[in-house]
Length: 135
Length: 152
Length: 335
Image (cartoon, rainbow over all chains, first blue to last red; front, side):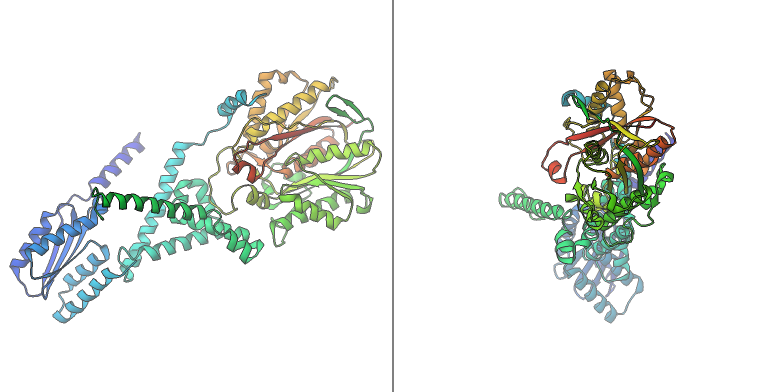
């Protein structure tokens, strides 16, 4: 009986573990607060997400998101939905959205490093080419 | 004695497969194998330039390599006896099926022995894997062309 | 020789003048290991293939049995034996090395007794002097043929059995005093109770064993009680079923002190061997090892040995055929 109780506790912990508020990290090369706020608003609105990172650079918006485990099957749809919304809000920007964990990690590193414009350009190109690699 | 009156005696006396226990150990074994696989794919993503999508290839290769070592050292059959489907269903089980057959038939030479028999167990997985993929793709094509579904 | 319906009674008392038993490394764990003459430290006896190992085991066992009888291999008039590998190549190849007249025998795991019965008939007919008889099996060679590759991680059910690596051979000769002799025998009929699970051979073979025991005990009307009736490789499952069948039919009222099964006892109660041992070497090594020794020591004086065999091939059960089984019985006595 004790074992069963432990099992139920473990399962309920597992299922409820990721319900905290999503963490959002943003970076803007030109420090445009208004654009950042718009992006933050869009990302906060998406409830299937646990974490997201966004970077503005030279008319590009690059966003990486992590969806909740149970929504992973609809990952591509969520990507597309965010991408469409961003296109509407930033019609002059090139939009890139990925739900890949690796892109997420790389983008987060980039945000934490506060890089120079030159570094940012190179890194972003690298990250985007990573995503294009075929399996 | 006839077969009809005999089978009930067998059913009554012969020990049954402990299905519930087998399911639990299979769940545990399969879960552990998949957790190891997840760990390896994180290693490939963290230390190398693989994305979630591209990391799956080297992960599978690594898991099959580990299965090969375990099979060669005679450990995989012990895991298999404990884990049942839990160790047979993940890709390590596929690796084990290929490698055990290759080891077994080495005595008949490399062409007719290893080459000819390597896939004698795993061949079924390939044949029906490809076939069922074809059937699923066919259904989806029909549903999409009828407008019921969309491509992803 | 007098044939009373199915019972063969040997009046000339064909005598087993010596036996030899060899076994693989794993069989050290057997409860009978102290009665084995040779236990190899390598499953293949340091040869390249499992099948070569099996052939070497047969050759060694035959030569040892002949030497223990105080004979030369040239004194043997005929070798009767078999194993479980396709077309019995191990026994055939061993016979090539021994270079004596040879008759291959196949009754699956019942070959130990079928070769002894055939040998007894030859001795009784007075056409030959010395017969070498027996059978063997090699775990890896047999498993790869009947089931999966050795290293494949398939889960064995609790009814599964473990093919032994062992061989038992003996030399049969004309009557000699103070040695166990063949009193009578029953050649089994093929019994098929429509069992289909190749991982549950015990259940398939139990009806055959029951049929042969019943026939033998019914027709052998003498009152001297049996010290032991021992089946070959029914395993724990098959042996339990056999006991149930006997209880149902009232066969337990026969004058038999104890029923045992070689396969169920072979590895003791170790769970990794599931239901117990099986294979042509299982009954041969137990009958011609510990049981023969017990007869010599007169711990038991009259035994009925009932070796059971499942007559299936990998092809037959994949084609959905049932598993027909056979059991041969031979009665050994010592004065």
